[in-house]
Amino acid sequence: MSEALLALVPVYGLPLLAAVAGLSCLGLPLPASLVMMLMGSFAAAGDFGLPSVFVTAFAAAVGGDQIGYLVGRFAGRAVTARIARKPAGKAALDRATQEIARHATIGIFLTRWLFSPLGPYMNLVTGATGFSWAHFTAAGVAGEAVWVTLHVGLGILFSDNILAIAEIVGDASGFLAAGIVALLLGWRLVTVLRRGKSGHI
Image 1 (cartoon, rainbow, N blue to C red):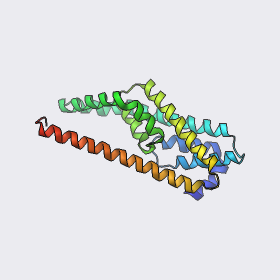
Image 2 (image 1 turned 180 degrees about the vertical axis):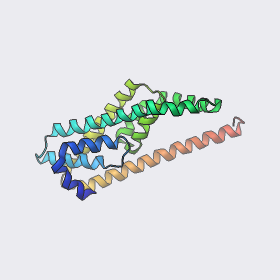
Image 3 (image 1 turned 30 degrees about the horizontal axis):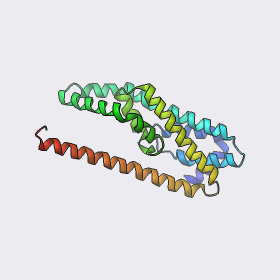
């Protein structure tokens, strides 16, 4: 994959960057971080304009987020409506909506760049639960600005060692995402066990 991208990036440049960045925000397993770093490296060499690289990656990422949110908002509503038909399901959905309303803004921001593998799922969940579009967009734009700046900047700074840096960054992001999922599942398990002991299940 890395060798193929090295061959394709100089040929397709900005359109390839836009496609990979946008589709990765929809959950497709594409190496967007690597492509951004490669483009940053080429920009440092003068093959592409740095503003064009940044704007293309940023606009595509924000666009991908918006599509994911809208899919959750319109397609997810049908699913949540079915869940809400039962009292227990409605109660669980209400609790989830309240939790998202309290914590989603920081979650959206962090899943753009620090826990980026979770980003597409966060887009769908916030859309499906009716989280504010304005707050989603503000947090998403801020997070994507960090994501694009970080990876294009790494490409500029480490243009001679792009593949090694990309592997380190990718491994760290995946590890952090797995860790946060494990923590959330553990917290949920403890909550369920406590409710069981108190006789609420």
